Image 1: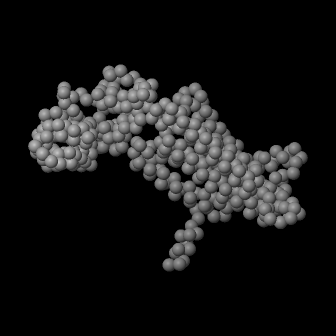
Image 2: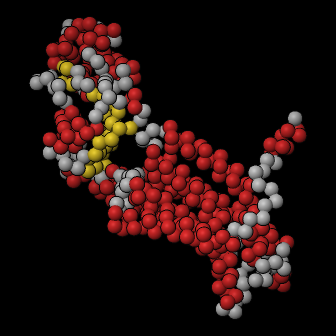
Image 3: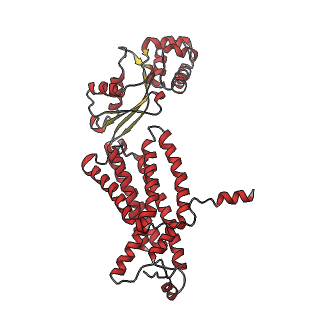
Length: 413
């Protein structure tokens, strides 16, 4: 059993490889330029940076139907009410019959941010009955107040407690057992007292949809979130630069920051090219990828530092190539398993997690690629530039020991 465990721990896909990664740096540069420039052009001239409601402000209404909804027809109904900038899209599994309706903040005022929700519900209620309330979109408090007013059970004491319990049972059955949409009021006869159900029929009707959730973001909050998202990204890059500059050498920190900036640019560019909205969850994914890419880069840098001590007479380019090949198996195994996980999340996670999982899919692919093809070549390019100017090459310093011991660690280029 021990031998099997050792085999599992020592699993390697690439052993003793000798790939000339630095020899292919121009191909890598061309690949990065194509996708980076395409993203920049899209952000500058085509789609811009498509910000979600979290950042631009507005109203999100999650609606579940009793039948397969038609987003085009729903959008037409909303436009007829005068809301011109609404977006309607299906989300979740097709069998869930759910849609997401987005309304920009321009259609509402900051003083009445729930106006958009009310207008959307009004536009969807095609079979509304004049003078009656929609039971699928009524709160337990509304039902309780109605029952207290009508008092169908003729309660002399504890009326508030009894009717509150009945209303909560009705709403709980509607939301948990029926998915938020009742087919008819008669379904409630097995849930609540028949007399209370009959009383509800006098003042309530049942529509073919139910509002599952509403998210409202004001313009000031959206502006603040945009600022915080930018600052969070910049702080993470600055922290990375300081950490790597202290642990290794400042040029390694610069190389890592440029690499992560490259990864972030391509990821945001992909969202712009596809015109997919960037929400708070996408920013969380990007910040996660900053750490993930940084970790992968540090693994390569650490192996370079070890090989610098062992291969003092070799050129830095050869040391870097050898280091990348030595860490290649670990990189492929780690990135491969992580990629399979986030790919499953992207394929089966549903519409709500689509942006988050897509950012992870793109980021892991680009982050793994850049650790090999971008970060390490930046070090060699910088050393070549210093050598061409007749300056002494920069290597990773030994933190302990005398200055004479440190001078021995310099790499000959």
